[in-house]
Amino acid sequence: MWIQTYTGKAFYPLSPKVEDVDILDIAHALSNICRFTGHTNCFYSVAEHSVLVSNSVSPEVALQGLLHDSSEAYLTDIARPIKPFLTNYQTYENKLLEIIFIRFGLNFPISSEVKEADNRILLNERNELMKPPPMSWELNCEPLSNIRIYGLSPRVAENLFLSRFYELYKWSK
Image (cartoon, rainbow, N blue to C red; front, side):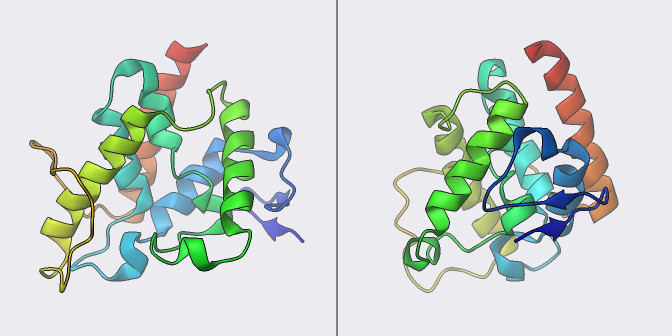
């Protein structure tokens, strides 16, 4: 099973190859995917979210922060509460993410620092982009201070994501 990517490649998300991963495909797809399955008060992309996470962690894991949701470029974004109920989804997602991390010279799995920033920013996003929650999201953390969410257009978010990638990737080589 394959999908056609933005750059015109055949990509096999359930049996990915390192050489098929392309940052242009990742940036473009993530910039067009809305967080929270679109249940926000404005368009807010996974690409913009990824840049926020990258900017909120130490330089040593900033590229990992930028790419922490990169598997969604090929598998799409699934709401966090639903993922555990999708048979084998987490297995495929982790394998794909590991391949992407190998492609860009990153350690797998995702660092605890990136996971914490992701959870804290999730609360910033919920508070700014959504109605008050009807019940607890059961996250044992607080939102980050000094987070600005813009709701960038896909084109702007894609360019911001790529700029951050090229800034970080040169340092990781």
